[in-house]
Length: 245
Image 1 (tube, helix red, strand yellow):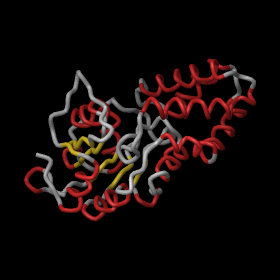
Image 2 (cartoon, rainbow, N blue to C red; image 1 turned 30 degrees about the vertical axis):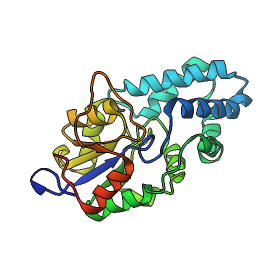
Image 3 (tube, one colour; image 1 turned 45 degrees about the vertical axis):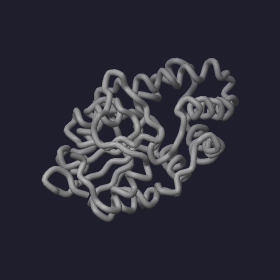
């Protein structure tokens, strides 16, 4: 794939939810929280107590300033709000993301082109990354990837709450990822469906962007006018080469 001046990209980043994995974000989140609450019911806490605590942890991860991992930030917040022991809840969550999380799959869509698109990117770029917002543990990322036939071996790196200290839409998330890979942001391409989190944040960090429109999440503050198309069009473009400008 060529970028400006036909220069080859050194890294291609793929978003997961709504990009590789088709979904309605609200429908997915509702089903996800319902199943997670069921799993954690053995702690004696109701969904009305657990879900707000999880959301609070998510909000703190989004605000993370890079001094600690998202994982540390989440668990500190969750434990403070619920009074539950991390030693009790963490094993339940680990089992949930490996096993029970699969029950949420029916509310997401199929994408038979996911493997083709990632394989095409790997054929033309040395680093292909699953740049899913690192609000989930790695097991949560791997489980959702598996719903479209992808696995860890398909990527150079996968962002997760264990390894990352920033979140989308903070441009620092992309900058830190580029630094980890040893690549210049201007030599990287972000592929995603969210005009704010994927396009605006990535381009603010210096990357190029391609908006996948199938499950597009628009932004009034950051409307995207750049390269875009359906996932099928993206796959064709990756397989035949294209410039984003």
